[in-house]
Amino acid sequence: MKNRELFNLYAGDIISHELFLQTKHIFSHGIITIHDHSIAVAELAFSMSEDNPRIDKKCVVRAGLLHDFFLYEWHVPGRRYMLHGWAHPAIAAEKAREIFGVSDKEYSCIRTHMWPWTLFHPPRCREGWIISLADKLVALKETIFNRGKRHPLRQFPTTT
Ligand SMILES: [Fe+2]
Ligand SMILES: [Fe+2]
Image (cartoon, rainbow, N blue to C red):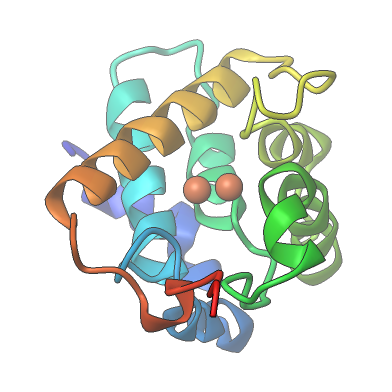
């Protein structure tokens, strides 16, 4: 990342917010928290955008930080776990709008980041494609480098 000051300018109010800090206690992939995952996605998306004047950097940072802002523990057996991949983008987008007043473009980037999982909601702008790609790259890295270190709540379903 070349311009850390600009990143911090766009990220500051979110990363210091008490609700965003709650994501330190919610897990993403394996032992990685939503907090660390979201910052990694925002940083990668920002780095990918820095040299392109057509990309809205503020949108990329804020949507990156809030793309998984759903604020619930999904590693529990049952419907929530089964539907999480499909349902959480809309939940995160609504919460991001409610708490941080995200722009329509930021909302759209959050809403579409899981495509193609959410088949009928593909990214609608360059920033949306960048967030979706950055999320997948970070998730892949987290999965590869943390193999075998699964969050304890993920030791289900049990067959006994
Ligand atoms: Fe997500
Ligand atoms: Fe994510």
